[in-house]
Length: 173
Image 1 (cartoon, rainbow, N blue to C red):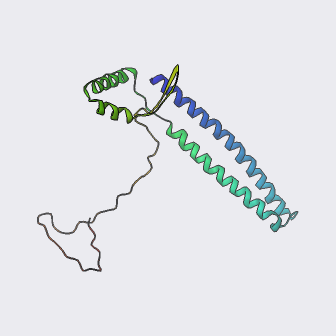
Image 2 (tube, rainbow, N blue to C red; image 1 turned 45 degrees about the horizontal axis):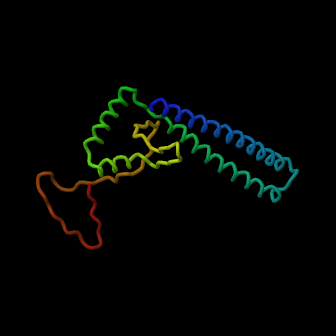
């Protein structure tokens, strides 16, 4: 299973890199077109009114492709997964076997639903779409939530109550 997962991750990364190369080629082509329009404008061959719509269109296409490029780069970075060695996987399997053997039918079913997304039966084959709970490593973790600072008022040795006026705000830290 570890080997198969490694192969799938490698294939996904290769697909992302191929798509990234295509986008880079498209970006180079669009930038060259935009450069030619700017050159025509600078030499006075064409007027601003004639070129403005086309320049705006090319800039929009470039911005869109750059956005897709950044998404692909993020996807490539996210494919870095630290996989456990085979003995560690065997230990997990034994723990799973014990858990499923001791639990009730309801517990077993809810546990399996936590990582099995879908089961497709097309006899004589059965395909299981599942996720493996693995630890992923990213170069930088994005902030998903911010914690607002707290302001502490008062002493640590006693409790004090305060009834603020209706129109004021009390800050707690």
